Image (cartoon, rainbow, N blue to C red; front, side):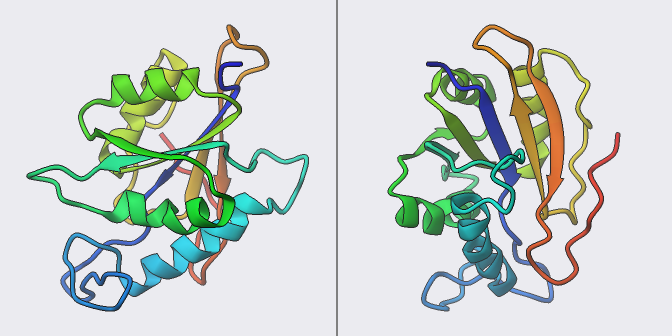
Length: 182
């Protein structure tokens, strides 16, 4: 059965001038998450594996997608954001689609079975939303400072129109309870 729910997150926190990225062992890596990002990746594990509200919009994913690191954009952040969840659930992770191939991503995600989770780079998330919704009803810019919200796309039946809702994660100190506006 084609997907009836697609959840999209931005990768967790990335390096800044003041805070460099590190790999899982703490070695400096500019293509990776910062310590706070690793904390978010861990918190997202329980957020998605055991949703707070069983009747709410967040569900346990049956398939996970993350951006493929490629030459020119070696970022491992999307994959590393969802790797702890993949490991806990044993959920398949597809990291074969590079940034810039969002139409291919949406085609695979909408054809997937059950609930789908996508971890991507924020600049391209509005394009993903436009492809899923088949319009520009979603905000067209994901703010640089936001790592703490989930865009949830639902449809009642395989051929029905998609509907977007936003869910603040509220996982780490300083997370906002607001959604992303237009």
